[in-house]
Image 1 (tube, rainbow, N blue to C red):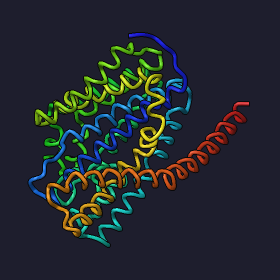
Image 2: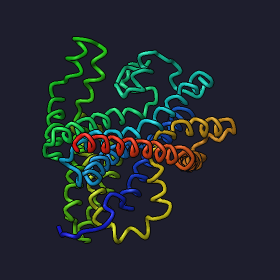
Image 3: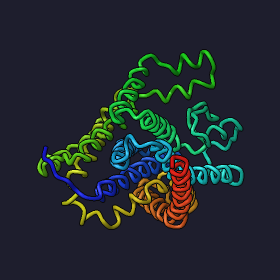
Image 4: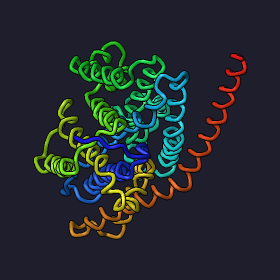
Length: 374
């Protein structure tokens, strides 16, 4: 390990590109799933593409540390942090959820589960896990299950900021405690008391440890601690190899095995890209970084793009195994293009606008407090 002090640590191109890779892994996983379900039941599913979520969680822990560490202990920091997270997450997610409702009502043939339950819809908007029509703890927009964990992480992080405790240590202990609590199977116990609580209790999951991994890497980064280039390249290769091996070995994911098989390799990739920022920046500053910027829109929106690709290929009769590579390529390209368009035309302007409103509101509050103190 070595020490270097870089600039703009919250905007590392390598981390942005890794975020884009994570989004495309999830897209590819769902594309293979779509081909299997809609076009060819014999087609395989790229299960390891789910590891994109684990990479996202590690990056989330990293970003929360590097973007807030200068203000720890400052009064009101918890509120500013929480508002910024809500501005970043809520508008696009709510818009995508509304679009899913419209699509379910207007085009039920393109939706896998065309059933709308009032409580399920409400819980989906509020980031509360609830049973769907198939008794799965998934929101109306299925990929939104990850945002339930993100919101739990944000609430714990904001609580630590409000209590002015040692943020990384405090949040890490809470997350580790919740992970260990999963050994007691709280979902089953909650379900016996009140069935509606069972999916909520499923938030108690070892996957929370991946946020701890990311925060630890963030702690190292803000102190200028990096891997040497040789070790960083080794970590990069080993992380990619471990993810590939999990697919090749057909690993069956269990409650505690997922953070090991996918979380640790994801954290290795994150640590490697942070350490290799200077070497990777010029290669990743174009399309990879753009995909990273649009990764949230790609992640939330690809569920709308994939059915259209599947229906189009089916209508054209291009369902033979020989056409599957083209179907997968089109799925990825269409999902990426749609995500970039949504990011440019909707997400980025809306986030900028809401951020400006909150910044002005915060400044007025600070001015009022200063006047009262004076």
